[in-house]
Amino acid sequence: MDRLDNTIRPYAWGSPTAIPQLLGIEPTGEPQAEMWMGAHPGAPSRTPRGTLAEVVEADPERELGARAVARFGPRLPFLLKLLAAGAPLSLQVHPDLEQARAGYADEERRGVPVDAPHRNYKDANHKPELICALTEFDGLCGFRDPVQAAGLLDGLGVDSLKPYVDLLHAHPEDAALREVLTAILTADPEEMAHTVAEATAACTRLGGAYAPYADIAHHYPGDPGVIAAMLLNHVRLQPGEALYLGAGIPHAYLDGLGVEIMANSDNVLRCGLTPKHVDVPELLRIVRFEPSDPGVLRPEASPEGEEVYETPTDEFRLSRYVLPEGGTARDLTRDTPQILLCTAGAVRAGEHELGPGQSVFVPAGEQAEISGAGTIFRATVVV
Image (tube, rainbow, N blue to C red; front, top):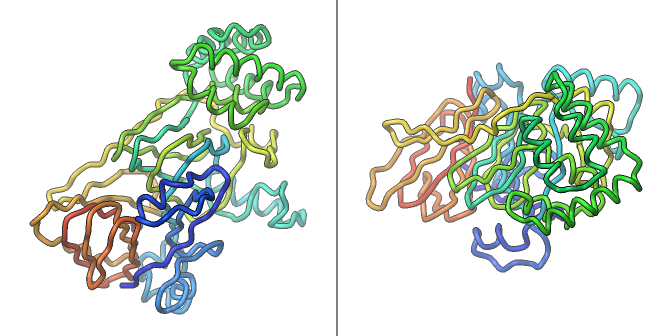
C-alpha cells in the first residue's frame, strides 16, 4: 500500500480556498481546481516507488490484478479527483466508446496534432464520470423538458429569444432541442452577445430560478453558452449526493467541492462557457437530444457498511465508508486495484494514518484494513 503525493491543477475556474481548507493548508491565492489521484500521464500520483504510472507499467498484473488487466489492459482505468469549482466549468459532453474510437482514428489519419487547440479526441476512450458532493454543489445536467425550457426563456421577456421559445414548442422533442441548440451556437456573434446581455440583465433582475444563469453570465459575458445553459436542468446536490454523467449528456459544474471519478480519458466536446474551440457539427453528432431527469444518486448501504454509488460503467466503482468513533475495523481487501481517499476525520489504512485529502494506492490482493473515525472514499473497478 503506497501513500500518494498528488498534483493540484490550477485551472482558472478553481476555488482558491476549498481544497486548501480540506487539506488544512494555507491557500496560495491562486485557483486550485482539481487534485488528481491516479496514473494519468498528465499528472500521475507520486509514490515511494516512483510515479503511479511507472509502478503500474513495471508490473501491471501485480498492481492491477489479472482480471483487471484482462478486462481493461495494462493501465489503471480510472482517475479519481477532488474537484473544487469556484466558477462555472465549460458546458460540455463526452462521446461514447464507439464515437471516441472513430473520432480519434479520424483525427490521427488526418494528422491533427494531439495538442492542437481544435483537436476533439485526445484518446480512443469514452469518459463516463461521477461527481459526489462534499459540500453543497451546483451543476447543470441533461436537457429540461422543452416546454419547461421555453417557459424559462419566455419569462425573461427578451424579444430576440422568442424564435427559440417557438421552436421549443415544436414536435418531436428531440428535433426541437437540436434545432434550438444549433441556432444558439451558430447565431451571429454580435447579435448573440446583445441577446446574452439582455438575458443577463433580466436574470439579475428576476433572481430566484434565474439566479444561477446571472452568475454564469457574470463569468462568461456574451457567451452563447449562457442561453444554452437555460435548456438544461439545474441541480443542487447536498453532501453525499452524486450525479452520473454518461455519454452525450450535456452538463457543467457550477460551484462546490466534490469527489469526482471518471474513465481515464481527456475527450471533451464543448458547447459554450469557454474561450476554447467549439466544434459545432461534431458536437451536434455527439449530443443526445432527449429531455431527462438529472437522476441524483444516493449511496446504497451494504451490511458491511460500504455505501455504493451504483453506475452502469465498469471502469470505475465509487463507494464510501463513514466510520464512527469506536467502531470495528473494516477489511477492504480486493483482487482489483484501489485508491482510498480520506475526506473527513482521521482514518488508518494499513500502516498509513490519513487525514482529510490524503490517499493511498492499494495493489490488487494487498491486505487493506481501515479503522478510526472519519470518511473514506474507495475507488476501484468492476470485473
